[in-house]
Image (cartoon, helix red, strand yellow):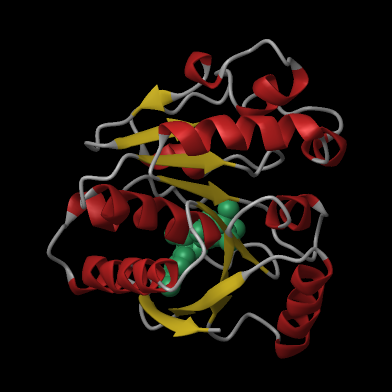
Length: 227
Ligand SMILES: Nc1ncnc2c1ncn2[C@@H]1O[C@H](COP(=O)(O)OP(=O)(O)O)[C@@H](O)[C@H]1O
Ligand SMILES: [Mg+2]
């Protein structure tokens, strides 16, 4: 079995060219934000599994926090929670988003954990609920996102694939912007078109695509394309 990769390039090597590429993505988002509408709540998603969503969301959260802004990474993949593996706080059974969603009296502070990265906090997915989509498709999620928005400069939400379950589409209608990860040699063109249509249906703002190149197994290669 493949050993689980638990090291994050932007933490391990702040000066690597790959970390610099994540900073380029950060810059593009900052530009998109300065052109009018606020971009505080950002959703990271893609067409299918294993395209690099969690990797991008985690690295982006780290480089965002370098600019002295308070950043929260949310593991919005309630079914396959993996975002926490890069941070020293990781515990699968900890309270998380699902706990907040299923109990309206639980406050975000009870579930949010600090990380080894300055300015970066983490909200785990929480215990796997029997009905993730129904939990997300609720006014309670709006309420939680509203609270997080008040407490942080940026909230980055990692999510399941758009075309596999409906969760990411639900998130997309409640955030300020959506970033679609496209993995080289993997993401299908037709699926991208389906995603664009789903996002349109939910009135989501597609901020851009991040092209995740497959040049090397350990490094990767990121480019940002504006929508
Ligand atoms: N550009 C890349 N090159 C090589 N491996 C990558 C690249 N991007 C992601 N990976 C690896 O692929 C796997 C799936 O990535 P992940 O970010 O978890 O995808 P997702 O969240 O979309 O399912 C992880 O093991 C990750 O380290
Ligand atoms: Mg993932």
